[in-house]
Image (cartoon, rainbow, N blue to C red; front, side, top):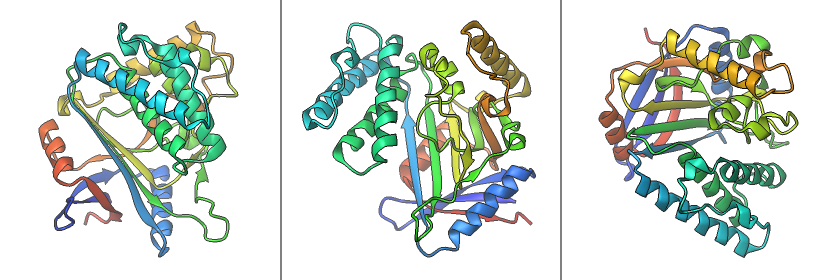
Length: 304
């Protein structure tokens, strides 16, 4: 079975698609079943996000840091909340070294989103930009291109407006592997906040010691994420997955994480559902999403 994402040009006159070979696992079967349930409803629609990053220099990082400070000014100008002066980024220090400020800004976004919902007012829209900038700035400038795609089949129960999210089991969590670097179809995090793996990735020792504020993924929905970083030579191997997992548990031990991080739900990474069906280059993916910047359909197809 394959999962097909259909993309559309900006003019709406042309379409193309990318296929992923799905794994034959119980969690894949459950996610596809949920996708098909959602697609049966006439109110169902596709929501998506495509982030394209090009090689980032120190100058680019400085420009993004200055943008962050301007966005903070705009948030404070609206008067709904006040982001403290201590969160403004120092332009004389590389942004990725200001982890306390970035982590605090992310927490502000998380808390506001949990209280007010996502995308309903101007403050939330600005905080969404803060969140994106945090993720763009938390890594050191590197010569690496990246395309990150999230595609979701939206559906809400008509009477309650509740989503159709379903609880993940320990067996589901046990299939987690470190984040895919090239062409893996993964179950999206689909949760506001940071899980323990994200704390590890950003060296957020403070949040890692606040179990009530860590947000592990507890449910799944028909939401898919694909990462293309650097090039096909960067694909995960069993050896690289094992190394990253060992680093994660070592980090947890060294930072005295105060709960049982060996529980299945705390496993590092995401649940892999499949892998891209055809060979692509980094340039090919970048040119594809530039030409087809919209996703209009998510569908599971038999590959026979």
